Length: 68
Length: 542
Image (tube, rainbow over all chains, first blue to last red; front, side):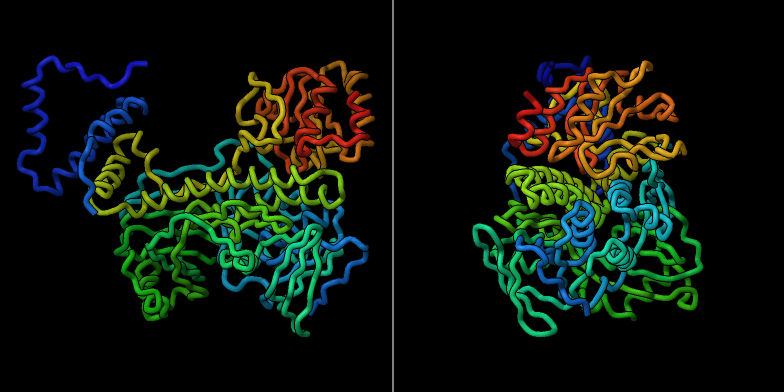
């Protein structure tokens, strides 16, 4: 089974990036957090492959410091 | 006051400590299985006050029907199978816990623990058991190689009891657990909940209702269940900062209820309590000759009805094993399988219970944002509905990986694999009238044989005749096409003509075979008894 793709998979990287950032335009922190949460859910469901998702979770979390 | 009986035989009795639903079920099952000498002690004065556990699952009802009581409980209880989930005023979705017909019992009934216990106590009397020895408080416990000694405070002063085995069904604050120096390990949740039972003519519906952000309550969630006699249970999530002493006062409770039911002339508060819960268990459930069952062994949150029901499932798993060990027909390995099987089942319950709690009370920050995103999407995105967790309701664990499981026929449906509870199905009774398969299984091992149209072959009949005389018999239940009234035995078991399913005394599937093979069936039976065939049976297998 194919794992998480790290090679470029987006036909228009610059265009994609602008569109991604734009969904947060004009939102305060809480509203932006809600948008991120909805986006994550949609994409996780679309990917559907738990092995791929776990790879992504671990890369995303990386070495983020834990704040208690 | 019932005096506990003195031992009629030289063999010390089994002592069950705790006459709650679990202790009563174990006692009744042991008596049904021929262990007459069972002493049931309880430190209280009578059945539980208040309603406490209320939701009894199909599997629990099937177990109680085996003990002659399930259908009576269904008559006394309030039957339901639908859950509705709301966010604020708006219904997000509903779920059906028994979408398929063809089961002898409903998905759930609601009946107060008080009434449940009272029915079991009546049943114990009806089968000739002397009943609960109330106001008997265990104060000391000593284990020896072949018995357990209990020191007990009784209304007539201190007394000592000697038991061959002790079943510790003495609840979440188990005295026996403390006397053995044991403790449950797990997570304690600091969320507080108010639970209230009210009698009212206000129509709050027939279903289980669950609210995220309820319109009538400022907290995160609320849950409502209907009970018989126009009684409703309402459970309010109060949060981590709630003051339990203040929240128990009627002046705090009544306004909360008025926001649901209207002014207080329209309802009567019957019982209320403020609680927190934990998801935890003992590392082992069997400690020498003391066996823990129910809340003494494990605790979960109430969301999912997995507390009371899992305790009944413990009782079901334990009673046949303990009865065979008491009678010398099986060895300690069989009791050890109680530990193995119920620890796995318990972990499944704890997992579901913990997940539901984490969904209902997410940590602040992103966890809450994700939870709210799931709720926001529930109406428009079908996948999000599956993520909403308002409690996954109790279903019996499939005992995959149990040491008692024998051969499988992987071509047959997975829900009826070894370790699973036998699925029920309409089945013609011995009297020719419509009935249910589970009612035909009886108390012992059963060989469910799907008879070919030519009838039961001589080889099978001959094996069955011999099995009747084993120390732990197998009774043959041949399924003729006409018996399988709705065709559901065939579809639920995937049973082809000539196939054979070996069923344990607790109605779990031990092994299944595509074609009949005497030696293989007998090996599976030996395995389901803990792996040790006695010499009498070695002759049979040879």
